[in-house]
Amino acid sequence: MATSAPVYPGSLPIPVDLFVSKKHPGLAPSELGFADSLGNLVFRVSRTYSKKSSSRPWVLLDESKIPLFSWCRQDNRSWHVFTGGEEGEKEMVFRVQRTLNKLCRSELEVFLVGENSAESTSDFNVKGCSFQRSCTIYRGNSIVAQTSLMYKLHQIFVGRSRFRLTIFPGSVDHALVIALIVIFLYG
Image (cartoon, rainbow, N blue to C red; front, side, top):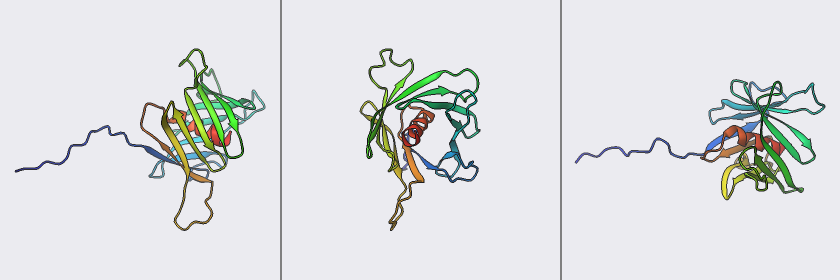
């Protein structure tokens, strides 16, 4: 009787872990890096100086340093996120509105442009505590992504400069998730 090796489906839904740090080889001092489990930078976020406005917009770059998204605070509680970098024509992709901002609890609502015309219901919700570098992104009742601090065995003080981002399988763009995380934690 011959036995064969088990057959596994090629597209198993596996969560993706990215490790977030400001101290990574190849990063400028003002950049934030998102590295995979092998230590390769997958995304980087930097703040640039804008010639057109007094604010400093954020820019999300891929591993080839191509701008994917840029955003800037519109007022005390809102951000508009656009495709590409700072220069040229930009198309708004989504709008983020802070709905709750307390010491240990913050919440954001995300409205995708073109998804719903009424804009009365949010497409994503982000909830958590920015001080503890912990938040969860929801789409409806399902979890899209989560962040958590990096703990070590026998560690008394947990540093907040390095943390993990887990993106769960689904149809959500990883760049969108990273933009939401940066807005939540550093916005």
